[in-house]
Length: 82
Image 1 (cartoon, rainbow, N blue to C red):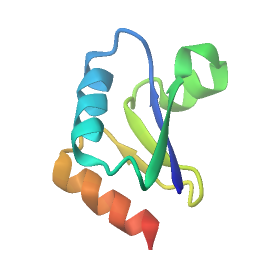
Image 2 (image 1 turned 180 degrees about the horizontal axis):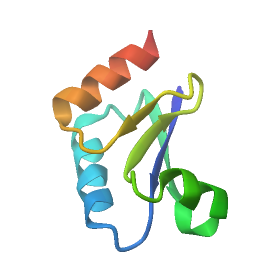
Image 3 (image 1 turned 120 degrees about the horizontal axis):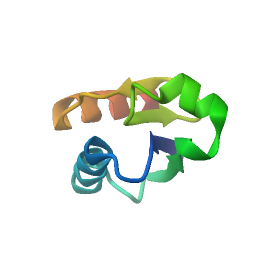
Image 4 (image 1 turned 30 degrees about the horizontal axis):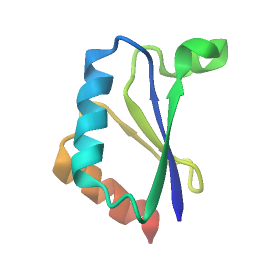
């Protein structure tokens, strides 16, 4: 199973939109997606503070930065799964 992290924070409207998009587009049988609150880690705030939401593939370390739509999300998943 492929593992991904969705970088975001509480109260981030765009993060909520990304969560809904992922929930409606991703086969959750093939992926495990962890939500990471960047506010809990100063290094993550520095790295992702102005980019969130960001979807990170834990194996390849490839990132999908906002803005993304269903098409870009599915392209990203296809690319990291090959």
